Image (tube, rainbow, N blue to C red; front, side):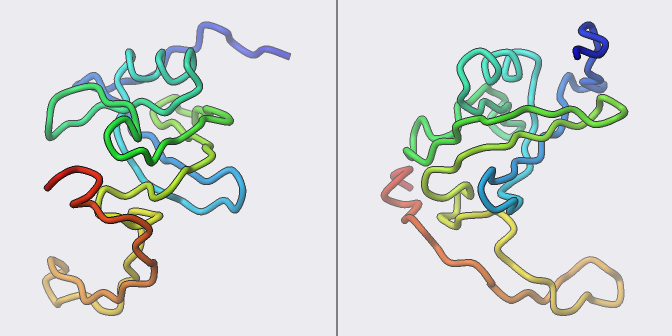
Length: 135
């Protein structure tokens, strides 16, 4: 059954919608990134995750530089059509710092002003970002 095939996605004032990326096998949340209309279209058409980099102000295909690709199993939209969920098969690490997930640190304490965190690294690095990106 196809519901509302013309469901508009709310790309917000900046033309972007957040996308949570989740591992298809174990459900781990790998990352959160932003998606433009073109990135969403390319993701659905190619089956490879595409995002929009706010810091570089450009479209990017996940893994094009690092080789740590994301094959998209499903793209879901939330009830308000203002957030996407990419369900992917992750090759290598999802985080540009070399970790499998961008959420590789566990909060242990928060400063009184709420601006600083004490964290413990709970994940492991799965690739060397210097090797992958030449930085």
